[in-house]
Length: 66
Image (tube, rainbow, N blue to C red; front, side, top):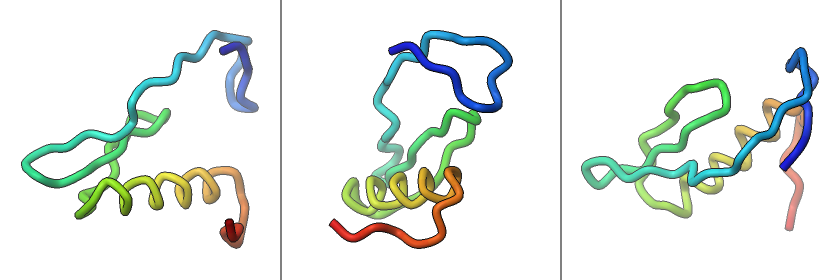
């Protein structure tokens, strides 16, 4: 996937990878910024938190309903 984030100085190729990890029965997700967020109880909780994290990073104030 090609793209450039606003904070990136030059265009680059970004590869998607699995962001969710299970460690000792707890779930975490990794960010582009290099942080590990969590722990969460279930994978579903983790995915919900990923979506909220992305919205916060994008500056969206309220989550959208599906």
